[in-house]
Length: 178
Image (tube, rainbow, N blue to C red; front, side, top):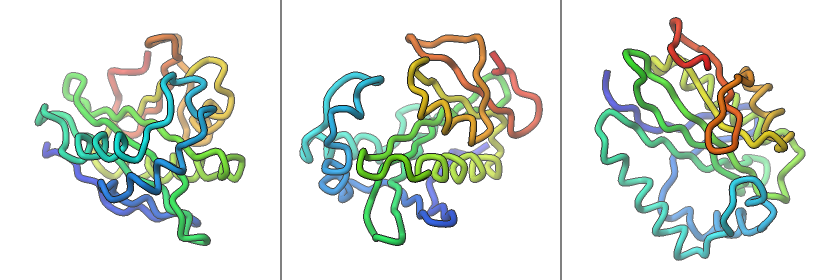
């Protein structure tokens, strides 16, 4: 199976656009609220630091069996970026699995944007020969748990670095249900 590449993903209100280094300045403002780091740690990046991170991310994984897929979320109604979604796709045995994550800037939270973006991403992954989707969510992060549930993921008994592993099979039987 070949490596995956990002493509534009359109949903009812959103366009998930492949990440480019040029998005760094606008995204630094979108992600500037320190509260976004409550569950993941760290602090907001400066535009320069985000540009460097985006350069590394868009260069791709050094492992040819792993695809780093990153999008910015464009709210078409206002033509502004509101957050990001990402998937790291690799193999577990013969099954292709995707670990996904999302973040929406504070001014756009509570509008269903993360849910719509995550659903769009999972739907797209299901057409890419991906067999399972996982996410790791802090046990107290109710908003992310709601997004994962809406995208069809379910919590498992497995933990990873203090977070609960959520899982959804989207293809043939997968190895990663726990």
